[in-house]
Amino acid sequence: ALQMRDMEVCGVVAGTLNGGELFIDMDYTSPTNRDYIPGRYFYQKSSVLKERGILKLWSKPSTQIHQDYLLKMGFEMDGGMFSKAVSA
Image (tube, rainbow, N blue to C red; front, top):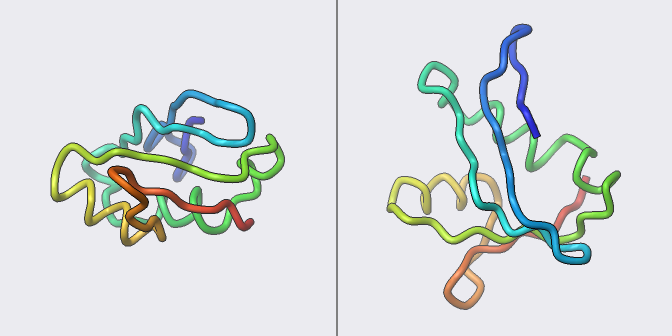
């Protein structure tokens, strides 16, 4: 999914879909848009995931900064990964 802000692409989220679960392989936001607004909209307000039948998200952070970001987006530690139920 491409994320738009002010008529420009500001980020991208891509992953592997398995049933109703999306395993996020990439979640990138351009440096000028790293104020959490694109992520909050995508993960907490947008209905795009639910409309596509996605019920749960999974991510495995590779850095502490990414882990902190996932926590701010509402993900929780779940085994060796982070997960989030889709609610929008």
